[in-house]
Length: 487
Image (cartoon, rainbow, N blue to C red; front, side):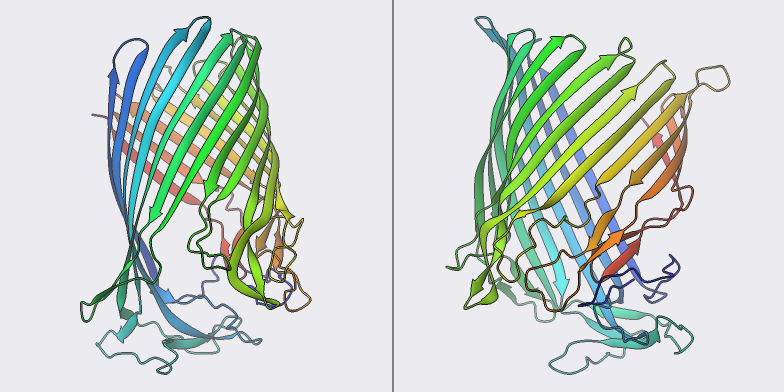
């Protein structure tokens, strides 16, 4: 699907899952492999060590036609241009945690000290050229317009033109390799002052370095460095909490935490890379056990505030690519969840969440976000619920069945509006809420297990609108099966 640019955003009528405007042979393939190892060592009843290491490799390659961003004519005619994707990413991660329990006078301490490291190497292909199946090279529109036309169709009347069905080959012109790594160290202490009063204090140090890229020209083998230099970000992130437990089955808490979000390769008006944006997280809640621990109920209220959101800078009255940390976004919300097990066979959980995420302070300059507008793709209300039952009678022992329902409320799709945008229109699109229901059944016998699941059993239809150029239906009814064997 497509939302036209510079007009009021509206979901076109009659968009079905079958309305596929890509080529019949288009594909997008993802291959993924991972491995991990875990080491646990107990020094004593009070001290233990945990180590985790892993690697994950993801490769994506696909070929089809480009997204029709504003290129569809009013009568539905659309010239389809070829587009390809070829990326890979390899992640190396490691984590080490030391947990200990000790006393200092009347105080009891539960200490956690740890460190983690992550190295990511991505490769992205670009500068694609295309050939027919017989090897004939497809010429671009011109030497200055490297667009490769496949054919023309009409998205309203698909019989208007004879659509091509023959496949295409592609070759990558360049491959850009981008390495980065992150390291963090952290420590926290949960201190019991008296049995009903506890204090949590902790801090984390994070260091992230995005290294200069390497660009390989596939035809000649020549390699050059990317234009952006290395960029390192550092941040201290404190956290703390106060926990009050007047009863063994009831606890109340209030907490504060801080984390950071990097701002990529954006720079300020002096050409200096922007520092990370910091997010303050405030929470307060209650946790309770009811009906002799047969029911657990939790409720949380929160406020997450990014008080130095990157905003565009005006240069001579014109919006530029420079940014400054003057904006603010705020997310207020409530989470309520229940879980219980009234017997060894029956288990359930349910939850409700309310969220109000919006821009709360902007520069007001042309191109900046509109203060007070809700962020896109943030539903105000979400609800979920699940029930599971495990049979233990002879002949049925090992069988487990379940059902789950998920409700996603009204939300805004498209792009948020900006100050001074050209044209009297809104770039957001209102999307109605929808509900999906899943059913599952599984069987376990000794070391063998099998799980079958039907998701979105009612085949509910709704849409994900990430930007103004892309409308994607939610996944239709699907059947999934997982077979496992435990060694």
